[in-house]
Structures are given as structure tokens and as C-alpha cells.
Image 1 (tube, rainbow, N blue to C red):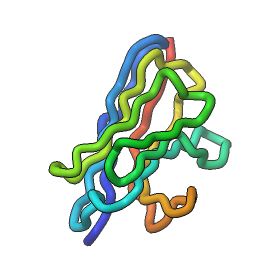
Image 2: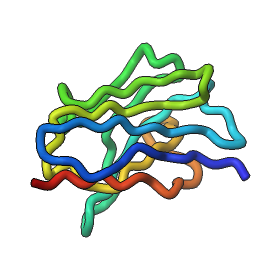
Image 3: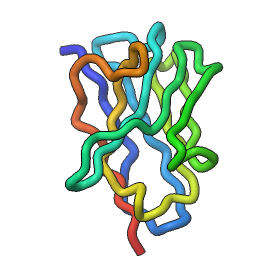
Image 4: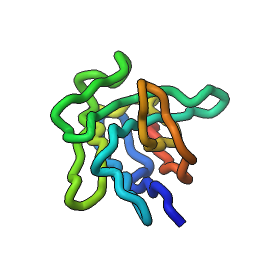
Length: 118
């Protein structure tokens, strides 16, 4: 079954870092723009970061700009989200998805939980 599989989440303290991965399983992601999204408890899912299909162009939400970096390794069929200087407000389940015209498309994966707490 074709799906996107997120991993790399965990529980960290404020100021620490995590690196999330999103792998295409049974499907290629190398020819598609991809995005990271997150959903905090009691809130709607929100956009975090976007990369064009080559990885040369990226875009970030204002809340993570300067702290998070999205990259991709098309040979490994994987996109990444390097998250530095994490804050408690970053606590959420993080998802990746294909993006078309700024909108996520396709089925959501199971996500990966990120918890930032002292």
C-alpha cells in the first residue's frame, strides 16, 4: 500500500533539536513538491514548511522560519525537517504530504509526535 511514513519525533527540552524524516513507501516522492504540517492538541492542522521537487526552493511558516530547515534526498525517496531551538509551542504531531498549488493532497500518514517540555 502506497503511503508516507513519518519518523524521528520524540520528547525534548526547549532549545534542543530533532530531525524528522518522511519516506515514501510504495510510492515515489522525488518528482513532487512536498510539505510538512503539524497539528497541536485542540488545534487545526497547520502548514510548517514546503520544498519544491528539487529541494532548491523552500518556504516556511513565520513561526518556524530561521529555526527549521526542510531538505530532501530524492535518491532515498525521503524528505527531512531539521528542527532547532525547539519551543513548547512546537509540540504537535508532524505530518508530511504532497503539495499542489499550496495545498496538501492525498492521504495523511500516521505522523510523528514531537513534545517539547521542560
